[in-house]
Image (cartoon, rainbow, N blue to C red):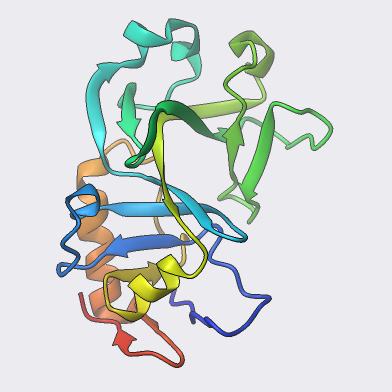
Amino acid sequence: MAIEWRPNDPDFSLSGQLLVASRHLADPNFFRTVVLILEQQEGTLGVVLNRPTAVAIADVVPDWIELAAQPAVIFQGGPVERTAAIGLARPDGPFDSEQSWFTLSITEAGQELGIVNLSAQPSDLVGVVRDLRIYSGYAGWSAGQLESEIQAGGWLVLDHAGFDPLTSDPATLWNQASSAAASGQGVRAIDGPTVENN
């Protein structure tokens, strides 16, 4: 599903959307990456979805292994603050907005995904979340920086629908997203160049 990027619309946000690195993006931190945007306010924050490491969750945070998605390893979420950890998970049953350990970022029915407060006791989240993935570091852009990179053709923007951010086969995610963009699911940037072709 294509979305239309509207850089001059103050009410438009990329939160919940996917950034797909174009073949022309030279930054090695983002070569062939797919980034899920978690928040866009003054700046933009997201996590790289397709960079699993060889570090097993069981080896570093074993208490979380029961809730972990496969592959049960730490993912490299981005180049910023690599010692910081961000947890993403799906709700396990109806979402309770009264609890404070899990906040939804994507709210569409059947595709819900949210941020887990990793300072919680994992036992408190049994039956609350499932398919937990832990990211080391994150991707961040200052105000206007990401928009400039999109306009320059460095990123393609896709709706998250049709993609599983917590796929058990993250190595295929960039190829899937790039193919989707090439077949017409890319974004035409208003007031900027067309960035449909990867």
